[in-house]
Structures are given as C-alpha cells and as structure tokens.
Picture 1 (spheres, one colour):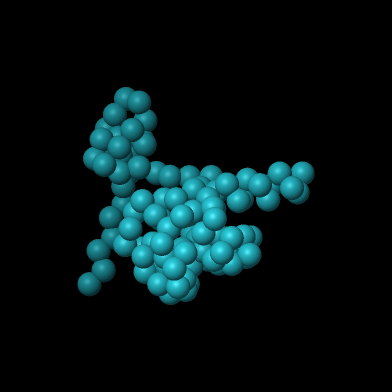
Picture 2 (tube, helix red, strand yellow; picture 1 turned 60 degrees about the horizontal axis):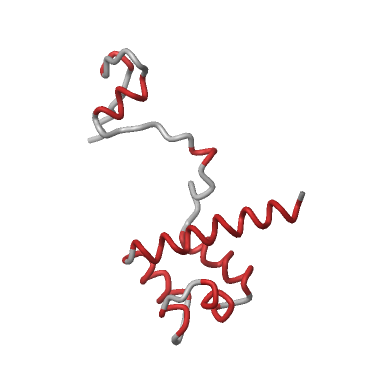
Length: 107
C-alpha cells in the first residue's frame, strides 16, 4: 500500500510564508541546486578526492584519519566514513574545498 502526503500552504498556516510553516513542524524545503553535495554518493566523493590528491598517501596528508594512513582501501574507508560523522564531515569539507579550487582554476 502506497501512502502519499501532499503538503500545501493551508496545512501550515503562518503569516511569514510557506517554508516557515514547514520549519515549525521540523520540515524544510532545500534548494538542491545550491548544494554541491546533493545527489553525490560518498564513494564518488572519495574517488574524486583520491584522484585529486594522487591516492591515499596524498589524501592522508590533508586529512589525518587512520583509515587513510594505515592499510587503506576504498571499502574500509567508506565503511568508516559512513559510521563516523566527524570523519565524514572532514571529507565533505575537503571535497567542497577541492570544488572551489577547481572552479578557481577554470576561471
């Protein structure tokens, strides 16, 4: 059985707007086009960082995480990053930095 919910402005009455009404209930509308991480898989992010920094040796110099330094593999690194929020945040932050550097190089 498939249940579909439609959120309409009348369901969340506020004077300041539709999105504010959603935030009142812990929901929000994100503009996905402004988020460079939207739709990116962690494996793709890791692969791109490994290419940019020339493998685990270069990546481990930028982020000192044990899974990048000692006997690194993509599989073990992904397992660690998926279960460790602080490490994933560091990798995502570095990925955003790399995207900015690539954008600077193009212009």
